[in-house]
Length: 90
Figure 1 (cartoon, helix red, strand yellow):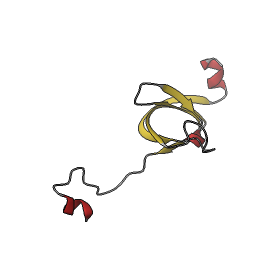
Figure 2: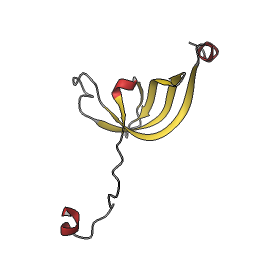
Figure 3: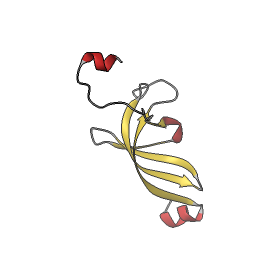
Figure 4: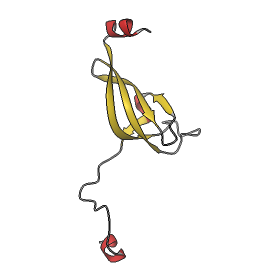
């Protein structure tokens, strides 16, 4: 599908920059376990995502359907560095 025909169908590609969890929803195959990757682009039809382009740590860029992609959850008030083990366990 050319970009002109994609625009005719209301599809648009927008840049994204967020960490996501990639996991095969069937639970089988090499992507059965969650893997963190960086989402770089999302293809939308209207306001509905239809494809996510992600880049893994090894540099591989792969497109996935929305069923495979979940955002990495934010953990509020999580300190990045602990001074000691006792502080970590609180």
